[in-house]
Amino acid sequence: MTSRGLCLSIVCGRPTVNLPGFGRILGGKPAPAGSFPWQVLLRANGRGGGIVIGDRWIMTAAHVLDQYPWRFLRVYVGHNKVETLTQSPPLEVASVHIHSDYNNVDNVNYDHDIALIHLKHPITFNAHIMPLCLPAKDAKYPTWRNGLISGFGLKESDMSTNNLMYVPLPVVNQTICRNSIDIVRKEKNLSLTDNMFCAGNFEGGKDSCMGDSGGAYVLKEGDYFWAAGIVSWGINCGEPGKYGVYTRVANYVDWIKKTIEEEEQKTICGRPMVSIEIHQRILGGEVAPKGTFPWQMLLSVEGGRSGGMVIGDRWILTAAHGLVHQHNNQVIKKSEVMAYVGDNNVENLLQSPPLEVASLHPHPGYNNTDGLSFNHDIALIKLQHPLTFSSSIMRVCLPEKGAEYSTGRVGWVSGFGLKDDDEIPSNLRYVRIPLVDQVKCRSSIDEARKKKREAPDLTDGMFCAGLPEGGKDTCAGDGGGPYVLKYGGVFWAAGIASWGIDCGEPGQYGVYTRVANYVDWIKKTMEEN
Image (tube, rainbow, N blue to C red; front, side, top):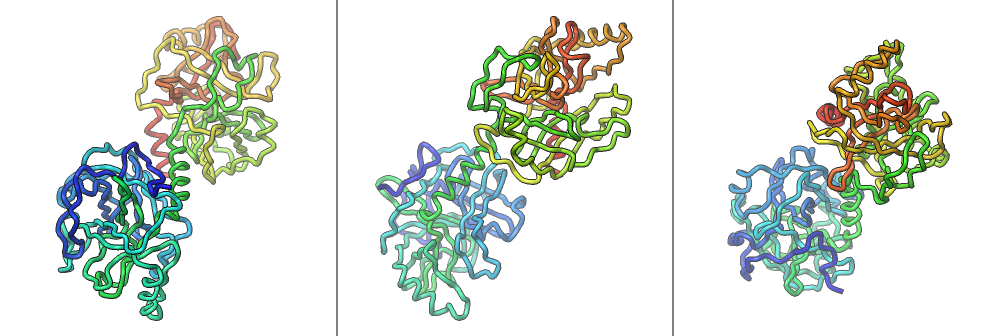
């Protein structure tokens, strides 16, 4: 089996510049531009290295990241000179994933010294930026086989280098390396585990050094370089009789793959794996097949039903009117909110434990003590624990700020609300209804008022959807649920079911909170909580 086991890109481990055979980090010559296109420079309190393994993924050592908040981390890639790299904007970090078994509180335990950095935006690959291949799980590390290390660490003068340097070093027999460590074990209590390997020369002089941590030790198979190791630790730097120690990447291929898959799943939104039929409706409609609206939430609030939608692994978007007492505008207790997701059948949902709610966040501008003020009818629910996304649970995309709501465009509404026989359904239903012109909707509300019916005002933070002949609408129990539009194969949250005059009545329309008006508030609330 080839060592090149997992490649997160079409092309990996094939630099367009040939590597000269000699040179060393500790006092070596600069590496030519493009010779190590996977090399990453990490900066926070000091320098560290990293390895591009995908267009949004960097692999590094856990000890590089565990000493300071990762929000201060600066990531650079694409050049072999530090000065040039740091003059360009750093890549934005979305999240950091340190191996859960890494625990180096005493600075002598480097087992599981591996971490992943997830970038906010994909890297554009070119001759100077390219991912390194990952090994197969059963990759071999033949003793005395030469590999290459690259880094921006110390030179032999103890000065940090401005240029990327590299050195060829052989893999060292595990027993020989363990014996060299045993000499100082009593003093420093260091240990070499099966998750590590050593590389270096007995006579010393060539090694990875301070500032190289997290960088790659690569081996070559055919035309491809693959990530055999991550620079982890060593006893001094290039000292005779001592070797550099590296995290054995092949032992972590499953962990890398699992971490990436789970994190990538979080970034997918609005793409249900089950297609949505077009001829169904909430008011008297057919059942929505399982998985067609994987963002749909069932909320049970003080015994009543309402809806919501998943927008993050710990965040639910819903209507404020379902979370606020009308008589005094006070937020209900979070213990009164039962949240369920992952099935289109109410009985199945209620048989599972409700999701634990951490906090409730109605919009601060919402105040409906008179029962006729639905402006800012939007709220967020934060969950205590993150959801695991799957084909049955997926977030819906949020709109761009100022997204267009074109009259006549057809969207989808889903909910567990009333059917046309006033019965509460046991299954999720949905309906396709078009967006209605704002002036036309406002006129329909005025007509209702002429009949001495009380009605809220239609504000710019709302929009209407429905058919003039009625019969298709959201109803009691659907409040807080999603009205979604589709663009380019992706569904996005255009509206939140808010209010209406009766249910599916001819000449009247359902009114929805215009989510695009609240994107800044949503993001700010999520960031601050």
